[in-house]
Length: 208
Image (cartoon, rainbow, N blue to C red):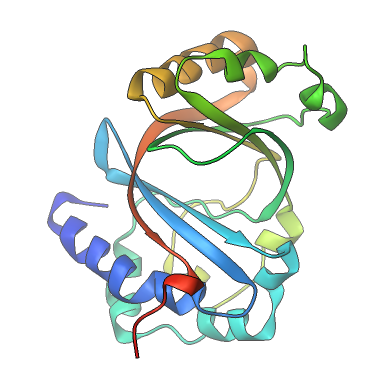
C-alpha cells in the first residue's frame, strides 16, 4: 500500500470492507494490525465458527460483487496474500496488543506442538507473550476464483503453516520473531511484528 493510499485504505477497511464480512453468518470477529516497522503493511485476522464459512454462498456473493470503493482501491494493493485454514494448536489464552506473524514453508506436527517441551512451548516463556497459535492452511479452500481475486496481485495461500504469537509488550513480540529465525531457519518465509489498529465483532454491531 503506497503512502498516498494509506488513509483511504484504512477508511475503506473500517467503514466498509470489514463490516461486509464480519456481519455475515458464521463470522466471529476480526482484528486489523499494522506492521511496527512499516505502517503501509497490514495483517488482518478473521475468526469464523468453522472454516467452511469462507466457502458459504453469502460470503462468495460478497466477493463476487465488489463495491465501487473496493474496485477503486483493491487494484492499488502491492504484494498481497490471503489464506484460509483452521487453528490446530493454541497455547495460552487471550489476545495481545502486538502479534508476531510467521509464515512457514513446512508443517509442524500438531502433537509435538502441544507437548510441554515441543517446538512452540519456549515462546510461552517469553515475557509478555500470552498465547501461541498454530494455523494449518488449506490451499484448495483459499484458491477460489472470485471477482475480487482478479483485482489483486500475488500468490495467495501457498504456504502450509501460519504461526501467531500474541503479546502485550512489543519487546516480547520482537523476541519471538528473533527466535523464529533461530529455531526454524530456512523454513521461515517471512516474519513480522504488528500492532493492533482496529477490531470488530458481530455483538459490537451498529446501534439501531
